[in-house]
Every structure is written in structure tokens, then in C-alpha cells.
Image (tube, rainbow, N blue to C red; front, side, top):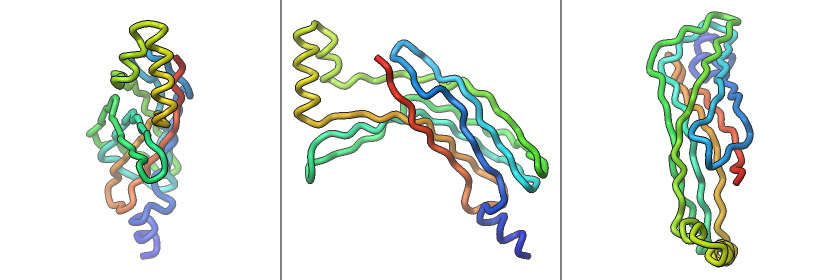
Length: 155
């Protein structure tokens, strides 16, 4: 009885680890990595979703706004069985398309425009953060494991 309750809440259930590079460039078209699944008990993975997300923040204090943009996503809908005390490694290639803001597009025109766009970003306190998120759906579990790993954009 207690074992079923632990599995329902994800205790001693499936654990997810994400292994990727910590940096990428605008010239890259995909992120290569692997998802490591391990469990103390036998589990059945129903769904696995990997997403590259940009969190764009701008403004100051009460006027601060945040938007999330999905730059790339892949999904695995096959059943994957992980045996007790077993481990499964799923390699992936996550294609993405970087989206430039209007200020960044202006900055690409010339060196003068680049300086103007840098000043506009500084005045607006604009910044972006990038992260790869892995979400799972496990059979018989209410709290599904997930993992998020921040990565850096190198220009």
C-alpha cells in the first residue's frame, strides 16, 4: 500500500537527467544531447518532450514584462519500459530556429545601428535567458519528473 502511494507521488520513481552542452551559437541549427532515465522500480514512460525555450525580459520595476518563446521542440510518444534498478539513455537532436527581435534586426544593419541597438537594450533593460526543458509522463504517477537546464548563447 505504502509503495503504491510513493509511486503515485513519484517518490523512488523515475528520475530524469539531461546532458547537453552549456553553450550554443546563432550558427548552430540544433542542440545534441541525451536524456538519462533511471528508476529503483519498474516504470513505463508514456511521453517525453524536449523544448528549447527563450525567456525574454524587459522593463524595470512595475513595468517589467516577460515573454517565453519556444525555439524548438521534439516529442517522443512511444512507450519506454525502464526495468527495476535500470537505466535508459535516449539521445536526441533538437532542431531550433533563433528569432531576432526588431532591435536585434536593426543592429545587424551596420556598426552604427549596432551601437544604437545596444543602447536601446540597455535603456529597456532587455535580456534573454535560454533553457532546455525535459517533461515526462509516467504511467501511474501524478507528479511527473521534469528537468530544466540553462544554456548560454555565444555570439
